[in-house]
Length: 76
Image (cartoon, rainbow, N blue to C red):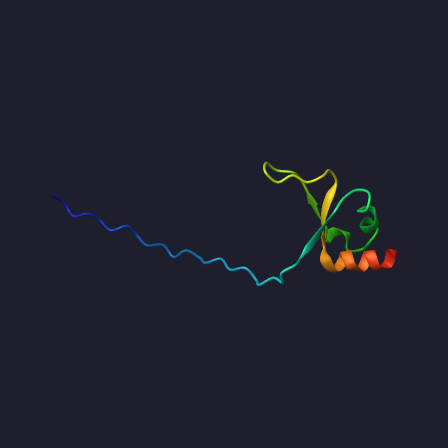
């Protein structure tokens, strides 16, 4: 019987992510989402699409809660 050679050990780099603040989002549907499209922070809104088991209406966006509060207070 021959001796088995050990597997070489590789130094794998560890990936770490910065601690991001937890954000809450509000789902906004069409046509209300139009009020957010003119805001400079529009790029923070996330388009939502339906997947199996989790449906959402067409043209729905997840809007950061603070932006939602800011825009809705300006409109009323």
